[in-house]
Length: 296
Ligand code: BG6
Image (cartoon, rainbow, N blue to C red; front, side, top):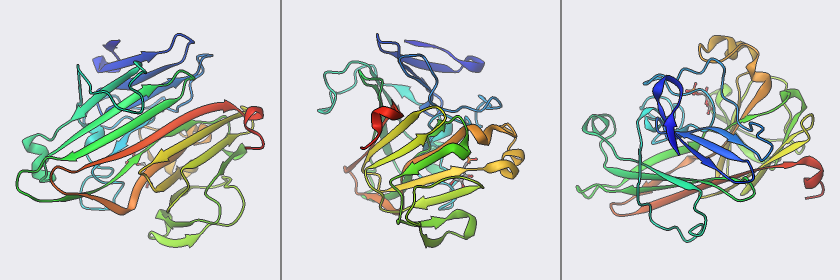
């Protein structure tokens, strides 16, 4: 189903008969809503989000490409999140989910203007799939379509904003003892301690070589988000906390309490593609009642 969203921007809605749904704006190919079968929203979108190009949308799942954050000379997080993507009316079957019809493929190809800021030809296809259990899968396929024989390199992230009840009650499991680059300390490298990660101040870290499964435990909501990823070795953890929240025009002063970004990413080692080569990066999200998850 395609319809008009905020400010007339087009969005696609995927629905499952059990009640879960996903909304994706063509602007940025950005998921802005993911609801479970009880129609509870699982992603955070700021009440102050500006749905007006060229401003990226604050919340949901922005796609950072071809550059993560300020790790390079392009605009922060690259340009994919503020371009209009198009729907592929006849998407190819993927071996992994060819029987599941609840998906949409969005495509981004660079314009001549884009090629002035990043001189490479590519085709970026993202498939957004709503699974039968309400899981949300994003599969990105990026192909180098350069005809000049040149390879290109990029960094990437699914900048997912999870909705949480109270950030001080949240734990992240799966990143203990790993090395990380701290964006708040000149990208210096540190090693995380052995306990699950909790939050009491601003955090902006890139965990390196992370496991394929990471969990966010929301004690108050009795909900656990499980992130499974493939092709994306790193994981960014971001919460702006109070001071940075106040400094962002498109973010409410207290909203930092109700969100957490955990981002499946490829940052430390850029991906390089030769002409004709394709890269695949996949993220699968599920939200399960905590009791269900205990002992796993
Ligand atoms: C995170 C970065 O992924 O995104 C942070 O690690 C950054 O450094 C944050 O502040 C938000 O970025 P933006 O460009 O959407 O405000």
